[in-house]
Length: 256
Image 1 (cartoon, rainbow, N blue to C red):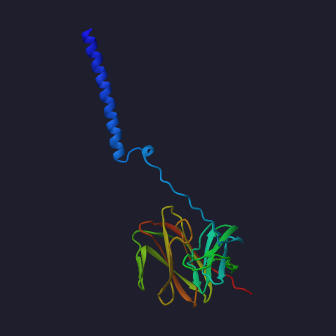
Image 2 (image 1 turned 90 degrees about the vertical axis):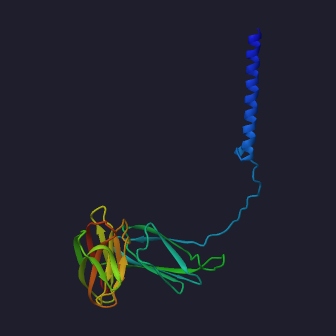
Image 3 (image 1 turned 120 degrees about the vertical axis):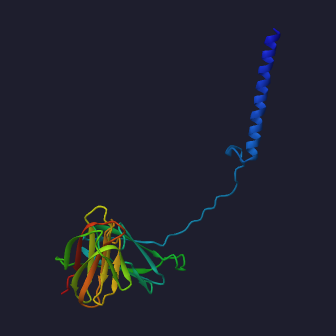
């Protein structure tokens, strides 16, 4: 019996010691900022404010294969214009509260145009007035230039008038008319290619460049010539994204 009592007494001591150890660990955890359940809850009243948006929304039906001129004239504010789906490949011009750009739809569908004030504008909370105009411009049925090419690693890098191509390049000459809108597309054939376009004017100056304006890494330049002459289209790639491509140059049809 004495041995049994000693065993029972030892078990009771072990149970008591383990309980004390667990309490000590819990105290240490509280000191260190332990369980979230033991932390005091932050008290505060939720603040809610109501407001009104200043966004104009328009549904525009646009056709594939046409060039559109889009202009928004704000009255006392600088318009910020967003297109969905898609984006403006030509950097918009914003002067005297007027937004102006060009767009070539990739498909015939209804596009959504959103108009809102620029974040830099200091405007009142009331409604803002503006005028939206957009005009379809038909492109010529036959391209002015149409070529299939391939950028290879040993092709030369274009160097001219302070502007260098980002990689190897191929150059194509084309005669363009004065005061005419042209759409220049470099569309990749090789899936890994990353086209880059440059346009050189007759005087040797680079007048336009583009990287991803055609979507899906394709390049597109939309440009209005000032004078007639022989221009050069420089087709290049970004980095080592070499490969085959299609190049087309299309001009707008002359109005009667």
